[in-house]
Length: 245
Length: 282
Image 1 (cartoon, rainbow over the protein chains, first blue to last red):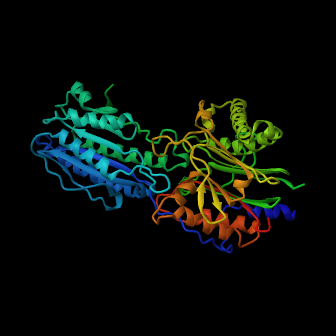
Image 2 (cartoon, chains in turn brown, orange):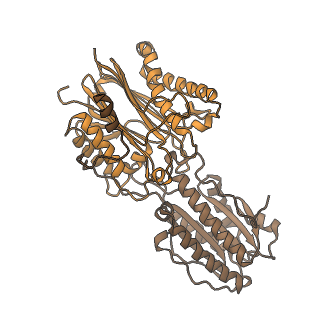
């Protein structure tokens, strides 16, 4: 009986506060999940669409703040492409530091430039694991949202990104929005799964909710024991965002 | 004759068996002590789902076998794979231990891993579930307490570490790791043997070590990566000092408390650590 009581005490579910603590140093290295959003801010997005994108980013921030794992793990990079491509966040920043930026829509659609900025950041900001020294980041999750045709040279940077995709070191999702999307052209540009959606307010809202949901799912997956066999499983898109086979 | 024992998570007989949220145990075999603890991680606590890690330590008098395993988080029943694997690899090793002299220690461990994988397949079949539901890593250490020879085996992430008498922390095996960060190989995959690593350390080499650590990635990720630099060595020496401060039963409780309470940003996994240490008078 005494033995049984002792065994129960040994395996209870909360540590006994009277047990003296161990003083053992731990590492502070952190494994981050980089989430990049490449957003089309060309002239055709002016008016309601760009306003919807801005509100979508606010929603991304609000919903992400409710999720502890997402908040701690995710680092955000925002690249816009309208007139010129701009790495708005300058580098990957902690989710806590991310503030939805003011956006304006103008100019053409320099997707190629945006791809080059992405490549530069992937190479500079995303940490590879170094045994015993650097934990390394999880596979970046990249969303590209565009409403039209690129107006610069995008094939070469796309090839560069494709090399990384083939090595399974990135996960990229392309979404076309609005009436000017040519699905065949979008497929040519895209790397990884490709989707199409409307350009109304509800569609953008759904898109950003999907981004949040996917980031949350990936965070839960990557931070679970063993990391899962496929840590970057993408959440199924909501109704209104159609997969382009 | 040294005492026989079996501690840690029990082997499951069916998929309704309870897998408690925290466990701590200790035992002694010859001149070696074993303390182990496993606790549910933050994410599992928050989501009110079970711990997926498991550990076991067994002694047949001559051999001391310890194992830890991490059930893959995306599989809801993987804790049964983990607890099955850690127990079965110990017993499978004991069954084959008589052949260590003829086949060698490394081959005996390889054989124990291989048979454990086959046993899990049979368990899955018996429970009428697909094998992938039991996906788990496996790390094992097998010590002849009479000669001091040690063999180790590992598939998947986690760490087997030795602390040398002079204070140097040395990873004892270099497991295969997938290129994709966060992914892991598992014992239960069809080509699992291809990604398994085995190593035998002769007794003269083992004498250079005072302590061995086996841990799942929930602990390994928090003790290997700085800042500060040199954290692994500091961690291993701190831990070695702490485990020798109190009798081993109390040490197991302290270890459990430590695993359940230390804070590292972004650390959500279950945490499992088993320590085998040579007592000073041996």
